[in-house]
Length: 258
Image (tube, rainbow, N blue to C red; front, side):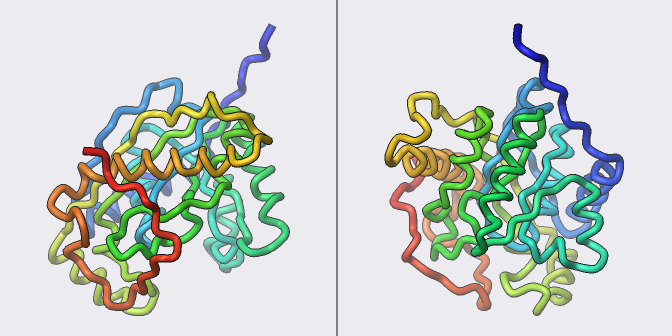
């Protein structure tokens, strides 16, 4: 007989922070959330895989998840956990620290897999950084999200977002205040779309290339869900951040499905 999953319950602090995120997004823009998430997936276990286009993304995704009744634990850079005020709050809220470029990153993946297996929803950015693709389409992903799915056995739900790059510049906090003032005045539309689970059942962990193929499927799914959010910006974004560098070494060959 299978042991029922005891779903992780988000601390009140994190639930309150998600409500605050909705208020903040409403102040600087207009949030539009599309795509349904079944009730059984909202409670976990689940891996949310989102594209990364702006430093404002965590706020946007926290707000969008609150709209859908999801309380994800976020795999976030270690720098946030070292911050004087934000760090303790991140730990108390149950988020998972990732020190990229260090040997401890494997420990972070183990912690995330344990969290998902224990019934949590964990939010990851498969690209591993704010994407630098010239067209702002998802880059070729790191394999961490796929390995997390393999290790936990949880489904992967793609999440596409567009518009947060109009709120905060790439180099924030540099230029942050003028950018926020412009956003409050212009109130850009910020769109988030929850997709359908990515099928990975035919891929077997440990098989050479399986993690890469799974990663490409995840990035492909995010790309396809992103296309309807930017129908009049198929090649390059209208909003250009002069402080954001571009790089083609990690460009993903997939373009939106027609």
